[in-house]
Length: 165
Image (cartoon, rainbow, N blue to C red; front, top):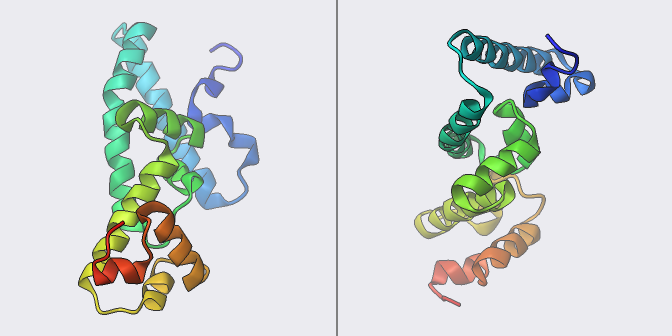
């Protein structure tokens, strides 16, 4: 295999920067998956142009995996790097996939998903704003209110009372 071969794969680019064993195992699994995919493609004679087409087709799969991860982890995690590492790819590559599929950045997708969840939580629960802020891992209720107002143009209390912008 030519020099620099492994650096074509997003999961191999950060290999020297990995520090804990769990991450090493996850990156190792992703590396093996990419290598096996590439070996299978070479065995059946798939040309690089077809691989690019496959990448476009599979962008929807990765986007759907991102949405699935958001549904499970958005309460505690809102960072792009977290979701990129869970999908075994760089944040840049995940951003490219999101732009291709949704015409939005990963951060915008995360924020839209979280705001939708927050709206639902505020509208349907009897929890205080401070309790929701704590549940969604915001540093303080005031930061939570600023975050919510940034995307909805109303405060959480105004939203709960039914005031629209």
